Length: 140
Image 1 (cartoon, rainbow, N blue to C red):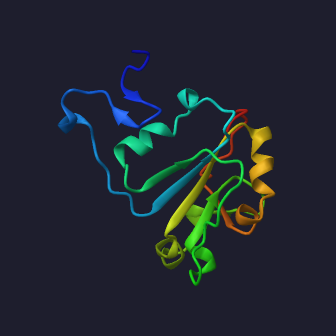
Image 2 (image 1 turned 135 degrees about the horizontal axis):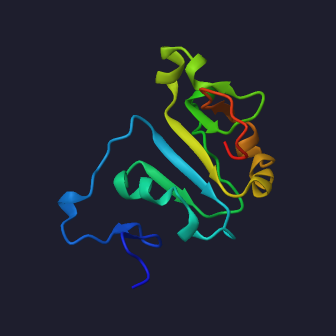
């Protein structure tokens, strides 16, 4: 009863006519790492799981599992995070972009991201960012 458009616990749209709910085939898989203390109801990532359920995985763990499969190239899994050493996606070649098979996103407060960034399975990932213009706004 407290949900209007979708259930953020089971990721099911609350629409009687499911044909009106868009389905999108993403070019890559996406894994979202959420901090368990963050309310899923406040997350803006849930709709991505609803419109692309087979390609978006939302994890609520403090310990991050292995994200790169054995034998997979280093560049095949990237972390979307705006650090100084992150490579801007607009500066990557078509070959580099085609090599990306999975995108990792951290969904938490800025203070909570530190916990995830120091974990070995996250720290070793190549970082990329989306930055088309500079802003003075307090959020990226």
